[in-house]
Amino acid sequence: CQKCLSLIKKTKFLNAYITVSEEVALKQAEESEKRYKKGHSLGDLDGIPVAIKDNFSTSGIETTCASNMLKGYVPPYNATVVQKLLDQGALLIGKTNLDEFAMGSGSTDGVFGPVKNPWNYSKQYREKRKQKPHGENEDSNWLITGGSSGGSAAAVSAFTCFAALGSDTGGSTRNPAANCGVVGLKPSYGLVSRHGLIPLVNSMDVPGILTRCVDDAAIVLGILAGHDPKDSTSVQDPVKPFMLPNLTDLSKLCIGIPKEYLVPELSSEVQSLWFKAANLFESGGAKVIEVSLPHTSYSIVCYQVLCTSEVASNMARFDGLEYGYRCDIDVSTEAMYAATRREGFNDVVKGRILAGNFFLLKENYENYFIKAQKVRRLIANDFVNVFNSGVHVLLTPTILSEAVPYVEFIKEDNRTRSAQNDIFTQAVNMAGLPAVSVPMALSDQGLPIGLQFIGRAFCDQQLLTVAKWFE
Ligand code: GLN
Image 1 (cartoon, rainbow, N blue to C red):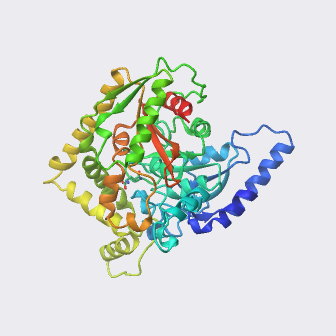
Image 2 (cartoon, rainbow, N blue to C red):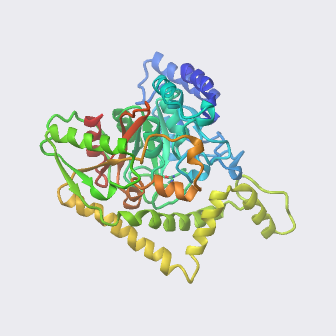
Image 3 (cartoon, rainbow, N blue to C red):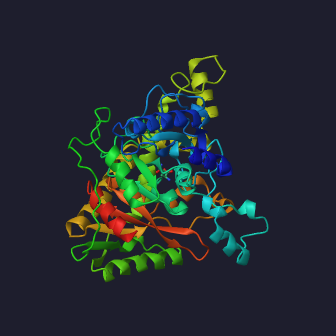
C-alpha cells in the first residue's frame, strides 16, 4: 500500500487521480494486517490497493464525476461494487480522473484537466522517439490515455494499484485499456450492479474492470457479479465463481471476424496485428471465419440519439437543490436552476442535454428516439445471429490506432471524436454483450495496441478464457 501511495506521488504529473485517499487506504491496510496476524480468514483482495473511477459513489470520499456540478459532493453510501471490493479486504487508494460525467473518449474533458498516458514516459517510446521525434518540444506532444476511464487505466498501467474500476457505456473501459496497455473488461449488462454508479446512459452503462492480466479481471468480476436488490436490471440467477481454465484444445472454438469492422480509418498497424491474431488462433487449431454485422454503420448515430436522450433525462437531477453545486442567484427558482446548470456543466454535457431534449420533443420522439430504439434492436440481433451460427467469440480491434498526442486529439470536437473512436465498442453496449480489450503487442513507435474479444451475453467466463489463451 505504501509503495503504491509513493508511486502515486511520483506519477502525479499523469493526473490519473482526482482524490488520493491515503488515510483511508492506510487504515484499511492496518486492519488487513491485523486480520492476517491473528490468523483470521482473508478476503480475495485482502491488502490489495484498488482505485475507483470518480463516478462511483464512495461513502465519506468526495465523488465529483470530474464536474464543477459535483465538486465537494461526499456521498453517504458506497456503490455496490465498491462495497463488494471492500468486503473482500481491498484497500481504496483513490478516485480516478475521467471525462466530465464519463462523456468522452479521451479523458481530456474533465474539470481537473486531461490525463497523460504513462507510455509517454516509457523507455521504449522515448528511445524510438529520438529517432522519430513527434516535434520540437516533447512535452507539448504528450499522449492521451483514451477514455473516459483514462485515470483508471493510467493508474493500473503505472503500477499505482492492482485493479481499478472504470465504467463502460460505449467503450470507456476498453478504449483506455487499449491505449494504456492493460486489460479492460466490460461485463455483460446486468451481471454487475450499477447501484451507485452515477448514470450516463442507464440502458448501456456497466461497471468496467481494469487490470494488468486477464486472470486478475476474472477474479474481480467474480467478486462483483451477482444480483443486487438495489439494481432492478441486475440478473436474478445465481452467478458461479469465475475460474478460468487453461485452454489447450482450440479445435472446438470458432472465432468470428466481422467484415464491417475493416474500416478505412483503421491504422495499417492495428489491422495487421488483428489479422496476425486471427492467424494465431487458426494455427492453434481454432476455426476462424469471416462474419457480417450488417447494421454496424448505423451504430454511432443510433448511439448518439439514445445516449443524449437518456442524458437529458439523467442530468435533470442536477438542479442546484439536491446535490453539489448551487449558484448565488436567488431571484427565482428557475433562474437559480438555469445559472447552476450553466455554470456547473461543461459544454459537452450541455450539448448532449440540448440534443437529447430535441430528440425527445413530442414532434421528434417517434422519428428519432423510437426509430433509434428499433435500430438498436437490429444491431443487437446482428450479434445474436452470428452467435447462433456457431461463432463463440468475435475478434476485432478495440480502437483505430495506438495512443495519439493530445494536440492531435483536441483538433476535432468531442462528438466527432467519439464517433470515430467508439466504432468498435459502442454496438457491444447497445447489445448488452461482454467484451474485453487485451494488449497484443507494441507498435513501431513502442506503444501498446489492444484487440477486443466480444462474447455472447452472460458468457463472460468463456470470453475471458479465450482472452487468457491469447494473452
Ligand atoms: N465515448 C462515448 C461517449 O462519450 C462512451 C463513453 C463511455 O463509455 N462512458 O458517450
